[in-house]
Image (cartoon, rainbow, N blue to C red):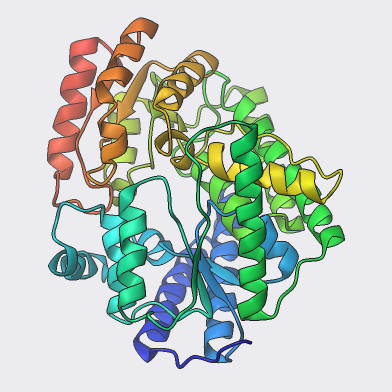
Length: 436
């Protein structure tokens, strides 16, 4: 039975304001008729569509769920269930004026040594700044922090919201994939129970086939980023691909269309030998984690103009995905199970054995002609930072310099922009990178 819930007005107002902010960004691009601007407009329009969907459900008592990117959203698409990703407000509000105050509020709630995005996710619930969903899908991997915030949420303002968490096995073998496929089936049953939406297998096949197109096009685009110079700068590329394929258009026709536009532009720039870095590419960097959201208008343009840095690839843009076998119901659930356990970024690297950190670095460095590897060491990613010694040794073996920063990707006050610039300058100077 679908439970109707009274929505906190503060949450609805915040979503309206954040939507207005994204609309302002879109309006700002309206006078730019370049192909690159059209690519960015497509992403912003997808964000606005998601805001509209969530607000429509919240304001009109329609069922919707809170979930995470690591739960094979093709299932939600096939079921026709509106959903939003738990940390959406934290990520999309990164440049919003309320973010610093929100971080401070989250710190008063949970202290300062806990991952900022998880702190914010809990804070937005407890401060009634998140719409209250019909049901919640709790993420139980890759780190203890994600488990803890769902426990806290279930004891707090969402205590009456039904919650389900799929149990992730540790190993990566046939038995594990089969086990987690059963967990995803249990999740579908849970969603049906609380939203009334059911899963049609023929519809799931259509969605998975469309999703396969998106992931194939994503890989095709990534092949173009292997070209020297890389055709796009920091404003276009891997993070957008991840968002469009896993969150905004998972198994939806609009996704493949957007990817084709992206590829066509990249092909044109490759053919013309145009570098994404305006002054010319001198350093090809692997940023091995989430890109520095807090610095997107401070550090990344500076890296390009001062040092000729092209962030060719990052953890969230890398695509070791396998197509979903759509032969039958069992093969589809098994493919979605494997993707959820071993292919999504951060889940892939931090959930189980440490080998993925090292093998992914090696493959990306070799395939993309990487000159240096940066581990930002986001203060909440302690699982990855525990492997920094192994990552440094792997880079030494590959003959590429490795930089460990130590930052909060959401809070500039943790490590200041000037400090980060100084670390980069010393790193490039000492390794001889970026010299004109």
